[in-house]
Length: 190
Image (cartoon, rainbow, N blue to C red; front, side, top):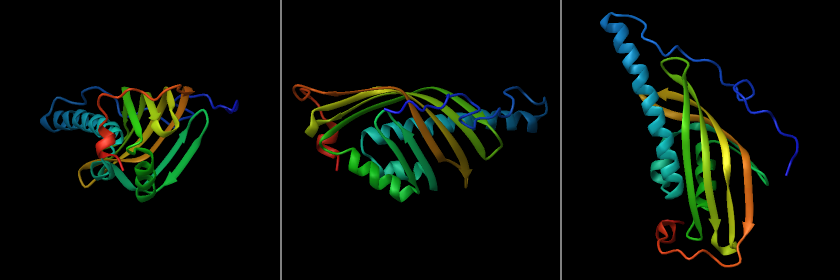
């Protein structure tokens, strides 16, 4: 585990203040723009929630369209650092991780969405997760802060950059494998 850790705050994560969350006018066009901004924020939340769902179900068909072709990924855990550039490489790596011999549980909470323009936004998410690697009787659990950059392309929000750094990570070798009465990836993982 590295002791060289950056301080995690909006400055170090490259998050700047977005457009104000206040009504900008009383005319119909101003109100329409305000409502659109709120709808865009909701669309970004749904995008990230779909990301977590698709990760844990190894649904690469629905995961792929959530990303910009040139996505940049950089994840820093307690025992790993993972960098990937491009949607194809990202999906290939995810397909190798979420297999019939794994169980994933990833939840993103407390979104802080900053709308920078009509077509660009950033977000910070609090991750809580568990990952079981069944063939190794290994369990990783912990939390992390995600920070993302989103682009709206042809009317759809996409993840352009996604990063996280662990707040804590616990890696355990289990004495016995978990007793699973249901195992979705056992049937649908690669």
